[in-house]
Image (cartoon, rainbow, N blue to C red; front, side):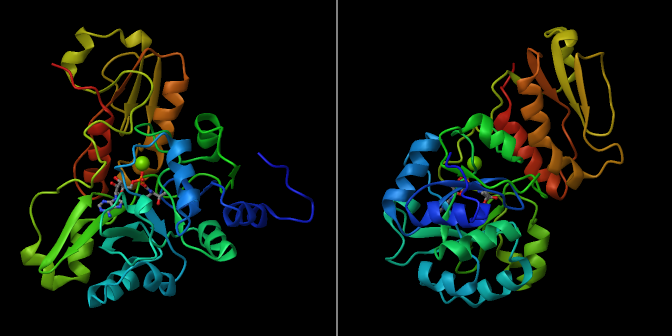
Length: 319
Ligand code: TXA
Ligand code: MG
């Protein structure tokens, strides 16, 4: 990583690297992103290289204002304005028809592009200072845990040109991804902004929302995996593993055995608090001396739906 000249702030350094075609890890309110100039195909290619990401998995483009939206999308759908007003900056990604300015490498050749305005002052400042929208996936190796701290990025992506440290991310879980359809919307990836939140802003869509949640391309069944065996807890599993060698992630303090490591994520039962801590807890346990990691399932309401989606994808199936 380059040394910061005394006369340059971290943000200016990061922006300079982006302008020169480099990749910079930066904080957003959800997780850390691995950013490059979205309009420069060579720079975006470096993201795929550093992340070891397959080219069929398209990237989300991050903007700092609505003018940049015009550069990226041809859509004049009035629902965009309503959603932007309600949720941007914030953890909502909209899948919209793309303009010719968006290189194919960003969208994996799809005619649509994922766009969001992150709710983090450093992210917004970096986009402004660089003068371009930033294509950025989560700043982890493909298929691995998303980073919620700069130290996670440093450990797992040492190849990155620069890391902007903005402390621990506030939401802790990736954005909700939504595709607008002519008569409703589809949630491609659940997140902190729930179906109910969306319907409150687009009440006319309520009836036409599809019940299922088709996946975004690249959202494989197995994803977000810790580097150690990870299982969703069921009582029967205690007969198969050694609790004295296991790490256990508890929601409010439930303790079905004596484990080597134990993390209680929200004694008061707050799912939002759990969301902010789950990736960090998984990072800590995979780095610790445990052989296996277990997580207690949590209630699937509100952000709990998104958390359980991530935990199921991270978990090994067991029979
Ligand atoms: O909170 C977030 O969304 C974080 C921060 C960094 O913004 N980013 C993130 O990116 O989670 P990533 O690459 O880990 O996940 C992006 C997802 C992928 O599953 C991809 O398939 C989907 O977005 N996606 C991107 N463009 C798409 C498109 N045009 N159509 C459908 N899905 C798309
Ligand atoms: Mg990711």
